[in-house]
Image (tube, rainbow, N blue to C red):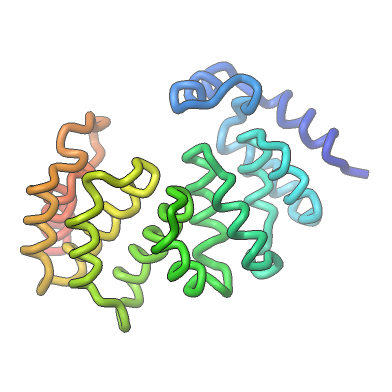
Length: 223
């Protein structure tokens, strides 16, 4: 019968120094990562898909690889708002926070109520999740959103926001510029004036997250 210790041992056996080094570069320590490749994590998750009861114990270890695996086992509708809120605030490593947002938060039945709460929260991880959900709504379901007010907040807050919240706040700025032509000029102006991510080094073949470049590239692709 599968248990937490067996699962952790399996993850540890799959760890690689290359992945541990990547995690350390982004702020992890050897105590909270095994360095399991993403493909291997997904294979283990596929094998464990009938054992969702392992998800929370894996999360509670605080080990990056275990938390990522736990996320892949969770069924979003089974989490209470309170449990999800606590998870969002505790997922300190950026890959963990972003997987949680991508696989669980955006699919949770209470995502809109949580979005509204997190958008005025002081916790940077809650803000990151709130702005991520807002960015998704800007693109896919903007009815009811005050895009002008969102731009006001971004103009006032983004330059000084915590880096964890700043990243998804920038997503919102970019999505307003891409998907809402009536606000594009202002989105471009805000991005240019604030200069957030202007100097960020970019991997060859990737688009800069600097809002004016990102917006311009995606609009040009759309023709």
